[in-house]
Image: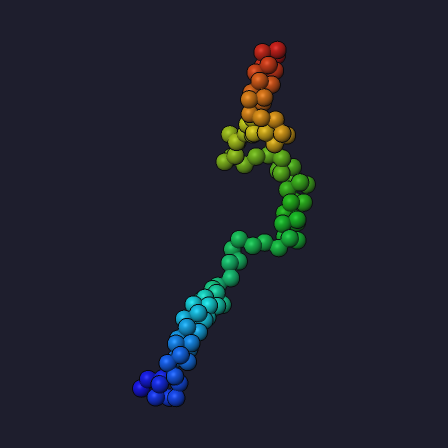
Amino acid sequence: MGLEQLGLGESATSYLVWIIRALLPVLLFLIWYATQPPDSKNRYARKQLLTVREALLASGDARKAPPELKNLRLDACEATKADGASGRQALRKRNSAASTA
């Protein structure tokens, strides 16, 4: 049984098909999005973070680097780039400071 038998003309049928083609992906996306479980494992309340931060500051552990980050350091070139100096200028400054020291 075609749509023409229901009293719809050929142009009305093509309009209906295009409306379904346009709305079906949007409808399927909305259904998929609504059924996703919330991602709660990486979310923390602000109050909880501030409480942990205060406890770390009080114990003095906040200033110590964890063992995984012991060898992490900020490169002097990157630090001076943030101040607006170019990479070559930073190297010259670092080399001149090392030769005078």
